[in-house]
Image 1 (cartoon, rainbow, N blue to C red):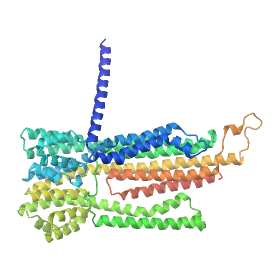
Image 2 (image 1 turned 30 degrees about the horizontal axis):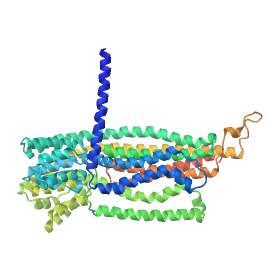
Image 3 (image 1 turned 90 degrees about the horizontal axis):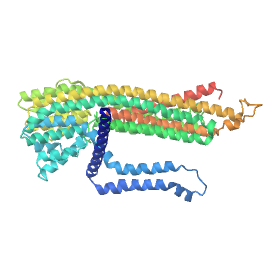
Image 4 (image 1 turned 180 degrees about the horizontal axis):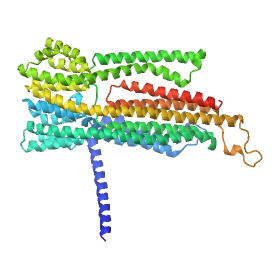
Length: 593
């Protein structure tokens, strides 16, 4: 009896959990729809078009029968699934968009708590602090949440404690929700906002650190899951290449297209999960302005694209039109990889720039406390302190410090001078630190306290980033190995299947069942040689897309510049091209093809 009661109580708990989860999901879906800024625009531009697309896909078999008089063998299940997917995407788009904000908010909480802490040191009121941070582009989704609090407080005259509670119930971020709940309760209890922020700073940073470290572990776990998934997908692709010899020629393309689709979808899902689970930690600043470094990278990218077009034109024209013997020796894969090679130049430039940014951040963590201490000794004279430090040697940061002093000396705008100091360095950490330092010292905060607080917090977060980059570098090496493994297995299957097909077509193997009642034609089938030629090209294109997806994933994990994608994309393509060409030449030559 006691055991039966335990079993029943467990079942009841499970049911209650499921009911709670369903209610929570429905509540979040309602909040997501309420969070839409322009509901009419969503219905017109997203929901209605996707529903129309879904209905069209549902009706596609009937439409094709009307347009094409020839009878077609169509699988209705594929059209049903194809129609349901866009409709579901349209319905759940607000929820997906709302949940995507969670990672963005979590990734900026450490900046937010540091910023609000240094402003609280000054005489600035809490309402003014929220107004300064609300709508800040650099804070992204977090800035939007703060802007809503500011609007409720200023325009609707809602008390700040109630505004915090109102937004906490509607934000997707658990860290921000808990922080606003505690802030609201402390304000209702009569606690001064400066006292609360001072005690909460370490708690929020510790929570952010825990989340960051768990996200680093999730990267490793997802990599293992991804490798396991790829093994199954590549098995389906390799099997689909050989199966036509047994079950008929018409199935080869079906298996290749299906496995290619699964490969790309799985990589897209991996990218989405990593973006959702890993907090955003951008290396480059988010002001929207472009310094000399970024303008130089854009110019270099445009030149490299022109170089790709020029190299590609020469190679394809010489190989296929002029039929130059030397170029005809190179396979199609090598030619494509060669024409994409100039794109690696901006990627290498970005890599060197990010190494310099890391060194600038390290030097900046020494420069800022020195500036705060000297400014405090000189009675808060920031410009004179910058001039004094500009004569010192801070390595790669020295030039930027001197440029900062030249701008400050013009007395046009101190805020713009500090902002462009951060933009010229290219570093998100430096730009955000300068913004915090400038705003707090302008509000009469103690420069020494402010500079030390900023540098300590940034140093903690920078240490976490260094650990993450170590894991990401290991992930990049893993992706390179995966790319080689996929190319090796798929091209080996293609070459062997092509060889077997040639033997069957030309009858080189004779009839091993001569003198028996076994019909070889009933057991084995042949495939037109053109099918293999097309499949070699299709597989290479799919693997190029695979390389691009992996390169974007690495770039996203690092928080690098978009052009960093090219630094990984081009070598991955070369791995595929060399592997495919080597197997085709060596294995094909060994088999006598």
